[in-house]
Every structure is written in structure tokens, then in C-alpha cells.
Length: 235
Image (cartoon, rainbow, N blue to C red; front, side, top):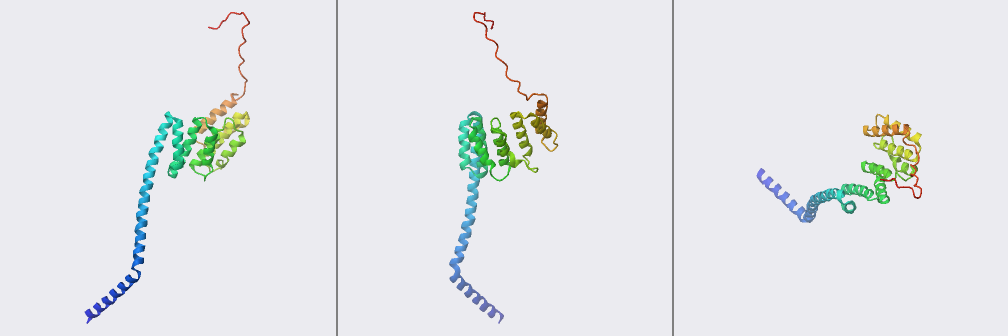
């Protein structure tokens, strides 16, 4: 008797499953198909991204090597990678494009690229870009311009604060504000939190200023011209 009831129960269950499959089978197949396609698409995208990253890495390294012999050609490659490579390589390529433009003497374009990199959220690249932008215009830009570039890096918890202070100290030195520049370099030289190499540079600059090396002593006058008819004594 128990076997009969079990057979009846199994038959009822089978009929219910068949009915459910007839009503919802198409939907189940569609859902499974979507899942399979999604998984396959994700795996394909991962392989595609890996392939793109490998290709960008090879082109990036080739551009770095080319920069040693042909900066103009390397700049074009960096520009292409900055526009078409995956995000990480694109950012690095943009930075090196700006560096290469500096080598080529195109300061304005280089500074524009540095500033665009420095305008993004604070990270290693943006901080380095602001420092590079400041140094790229250090020889001719007013101090206010340089200060505006490095101001976001001056916070007490910024890893770039010492380099930013060094840029400003040099801006004062170049402008002839030697007392202030000397104090800034001395403060950097005596700051135990500053990197050792930077403290060494600051110590040297402070000593130079203290010894009067930053003063403008004028130019050496040209030697007097010999009088007409005088013998030429030049070897």
C-alpha cells in the first residue's frame, strides 16, 4: 500500500513540474541564457582589457626608450597613448608627454598638461604634476603664480609639502628676497620630517645665501678697446 501512495505522489509531482515547465520554461531558458551571456561577456571583457593593458605597456616602454634619441617622435607617441591607452597608462603618458614638451622647449603646452593633471583628485600623479608645473615656470613666473600651483600641497599632512616649500623658497631667492629665502631654506634644512636629500639641498642654499652668494654684483665690464694704430697684443 505504501508503494502505491509513493507512486501516486511522484506522478502528481511530475505532472506539476511538467505544467510549470510548459508555463514558465521559456522564461527560465531566457534567464539562464542571460546569465551565461553575462558571464561569458565579463570573461571576454577581462581578456580584452588584459590585452589592451599589455599592448599599452609595450607602447609606453617603447616611447620611453624613443625619448632618449628622438624626443619629438616620443612626444607624439605619449600624446597618442594619453588619448587611447587604458586609464593608468593614459595618465602616465600624459605626464611624460609634458616632460618631453619641456625638453623640446614648449613650456606653455607642458604647463597646461601639468595643470590638467594637477586639477584631479589629490593623488601621487596630481601632486607631482603640480610640482613639475611650478618648476617649469620658476624662471619667469611671479611668485603668486607659483604659490597658486603648489598651495593645495602645503597642508601639514601632505606628502608634497616639503617640495612645495622648496619651490617657494627658490622663488624668493630668484626674486632677490634673500632674507626670506634664507629663512625658508634654513627651516627646511632643520625640519627632521623633511627628506634627507631635500634637507641637504636646503642646507646648501641657506649657506650660499648667508655667504652673500645670492647677491647681484653686476656684470664684468668689457675690456677697453685698443687705441687706433696700437699694436694687437692678442695671441
